[in-house]
Length: 302
Picture 1 (cartoon, rainbow, N blue to C red):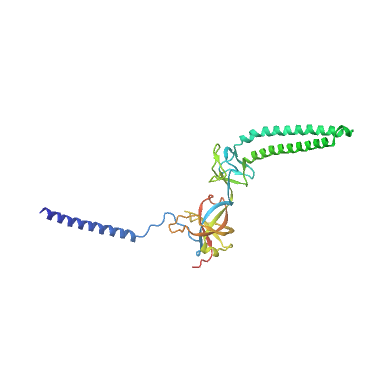
Picture 2 (cartoon, rainbow, N blue to C red):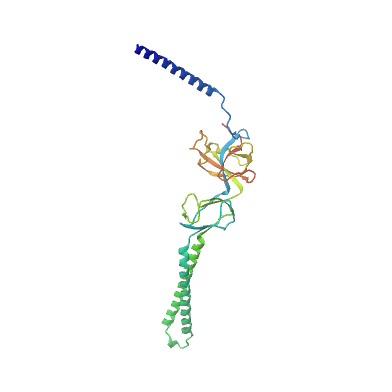
């Protein structure tokens, strides 16, 4: 009797499981057949209809300038901050140069000693050359004194050169702006240790009065790029405000794709042709390093 009840319970339990499974399948099929909800942010569409699309990376005019340290060392002081506008030649940061400063007085003293030695030898030579009696001094001794003067002159030049070298090395520790621009990124602080091979660079500088965008076009479409074609960019997430672009140049070197958009269907092994466009800053709040959607007018043949 008990075994019969267990068999009946098992049958009913199996039937209930089948019913639940059928309900879940029907519910999932209804969800899949329902219309997909619209995206929260409407993506930008090509304003030219048929044309080329590319991912673009915003850069400073004439590209971003990474400023590094000329040699390893401690940072003594930093003279700028992010967003500061600097002119070419303006100090950016200074490395510790106490060892060179300590050597400078010694080298200055060596210069003074060499000057005194040269003056003494010149006076001795002048007295000997003033002697009228040729029997009072031999020609060999006069020749040796003149040689001593030339050696002292060379020693003085060497001492002055050593001092000038130390002053030049001290000046080299003051890292200056190679161009006029705005401080975009500052990766160094006073007291930190820096080296020429550090990554990222100690400081990134760029002229952002006019920005440029580096559009990466698939190599299969590279031959369809026309310099005279119109181009428009959109900030990601803002399809209502197009930014007109001005053609600058095509870089004639196809490189592996580096700017990824995050699209699941995007190929990461693609090689791309980089096309540079410019647009004035200030019209829209656009930042260096920002990804944008770029559309280029032209007939796309399939």
